[in-house]
Image (cartoon, rainbow, N blue to C red):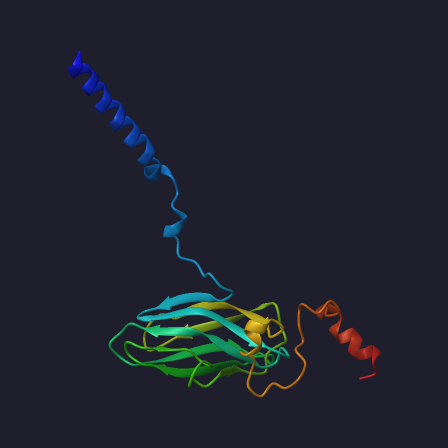
Length: 186
């Protein structure tokens, strides 16, 4: 009788342990998914990781590229970021990323990387093709944000000195932008 009770206790304890831990076998684990936890986008090209890339602009025409590029390789790499400007021309901005290092344009001692002659798509996206060497490039759909939030205000292009044209401005409506200019006699 005593042996039967011990065996039953072991079986019940095993069933409880299995039942309590078995949900890990069938339940989706969201913590295993990688995602962009901020407003930017990320991508990997060979040994380069582009992390949290976004554009910050005050006027919709000149934007500062913000993000971190990490080079886990053994060679220095010249990364090219290509975009189409408002005139439909493809423009490529390039910079070096040291082997085993990273570059964060606009932070610390790093100069800002400016995208110019944009079409004013604040709140929209700009397709940016990233590529280096013989690696297959990657198209990133980069968000274009304004500097109306304090955390982005410091990231505006250094020479920007006007009022931020913001998508958070209740009077701003890009569909009526050209109509307003005509009404004002410009």
